[in-house]
Length: 226
Image (cartoon, rainbow, N blue to C red):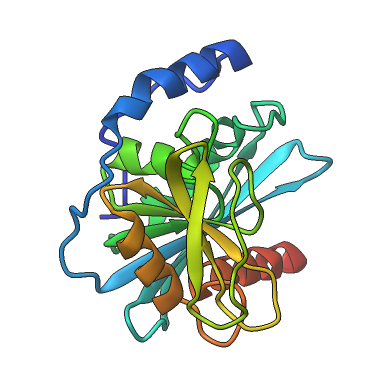
């Protein structure tokens, strides 16, 4: 079953061509809620091995709202795109797609460790994956790529808009008191308030959502066993 792209494109492109692809595909992003009942959520972690020559993607599929691990998949492939800020999806998505295709179940919602529309061309990895696979997706980033924000109260669940000029491109969300916030932005087929809701609902006593934590743990564990 798994999750496979309904739309694809060439990944062996130059940075300039990659930016042009982002501009061409950004118009396909849907920023309103188009998701049914959410019973399974998936998180993705991407790392690099052998001096960045191998891209390693781990996908964890969790039940919702219980957040119990159902299954996981690991994919490794040669790294074929350089590190270029704003173009990380071209470096990471080919391995992520291989991992997603290995799943026997299909997630109802994808939480990506990265940006959705909080991106210079409004097309971060969550938007890119969401559009390619036509799946609701959220960007859950540990750091800000672009945008500005005001003072955020130090209480779990507090959030304020992330703005790029007059445009709201995401939310700055406090998932735990006394720790740095997360940067949430819609990727595809989801609104900002709903994206914030699911990001918080997938977070327990830690800063990061369980989707991200589980995928990272599995990827690290698999690497140690090799």
